Length: 135
Image 1 (cartoon, one colour):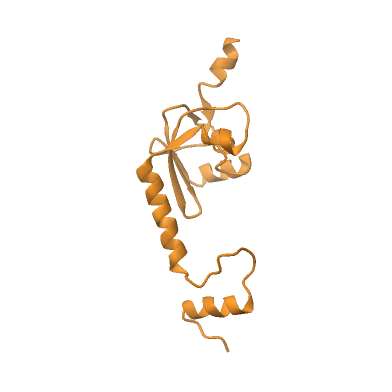
Image 2 (tube, one colour):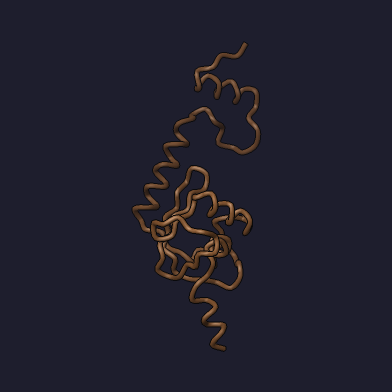
């Protein structure tokens, strides 16, 4: 059974991103790594670069930057609860990410809170907030 243990000492970066639920598919993970949106220990990597517990991974998804420490590896993609056990985020990094998200949310005050498409009234509020006139 030594082979099973060796198998989980390291894991491909793209696979770990998928298993840890930062991306929905392996293909998206490969695209993120190849696009330079993923760094391991401060270095841009290839999708096959092995990660191990103790590594620091930076992932940029949209406008959010996640800085996490790898705490575990898994053979399979599991639930979100299980995936959260594979990494830890430092409190200062989490606070910064949440602060930036709040700033983005406050940048467009007219955007409706509920989901879906804006109504005609909502669209008028958004245009007014952005300084545009409707004809």
